[in-house]
Length: 252
Ligand SMILES: Nc1ncnc2c1ncn2[C@@H]1O[C@H](COP(=O)(O)OP(=O)(O)OP(=O)(O)O)[C@@H](O)[C@H]1O
Image (cartoon, rainbow, N blue to C red; front, side):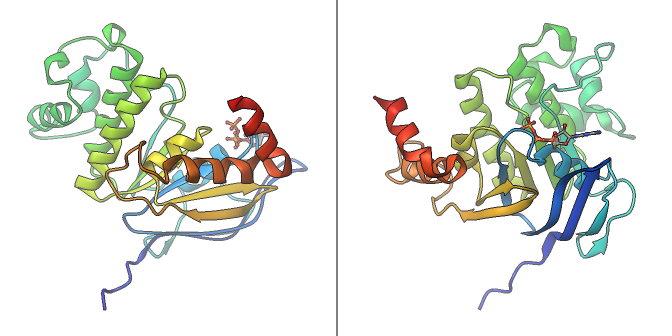
């Protein structure tokens, strides 16, 4: 029998309010080491808030978060976060951005990481000369160079065009398959969630309303017979009772 993997993240009864506005209510979620979990839900349901709580940027109003079995207090040193805007420093070169915060032989490490995201030729360029997709490749390299246990992805591909997104899915997936970090992705795009995640988790009214295992092999292929059926199933669940009619209307 294979040994069950330990949990990277255990969230127990998590609560978060802003003033009298309760965003997360008694939320429970466990994520195993190396899992890829996508978090979906309607705008404003608290997806980004949950990621900020996991990164330690925000403090909970109640409940517990355990990271690798230990209670989280303050900044989460096991996690790196990637945002929709790459947040590159414009006064540093691409290479310097990737090597930020590293000591010793940082240049060679940064060059190797840039190679993994396909941008070794742009090392000495300024971030302003890169396309949106290239900036996100640099942001991904900058996060992964620290070999974090956990990668928190807050809608990192939200501003990219559809084709670039698909290329980024392949890149993120191949790096995840190679490096075995735990990934937690917030996204509006259910297809993106199905393209990447082991599990798709829906937040509704401050709780986990659905935890759906995506049983498709890696590397994921969009033309797999079950790919669109899985996407539609999840979309229907998010949209509620009207979902089926809505999807049907959109397709006709
Ligand atoms: N610092 C804050 N102070 C007050 N309210 C906040 C703060 N941060 C978030 N909120 C509120 O909490 C709710 C959840 O916000 P959050 O950004 O987590 O939602 P989301 O699900 O990520 O939304 P979207 O999908 O639109 O990005 C929103 O109503 C938001 O206005």
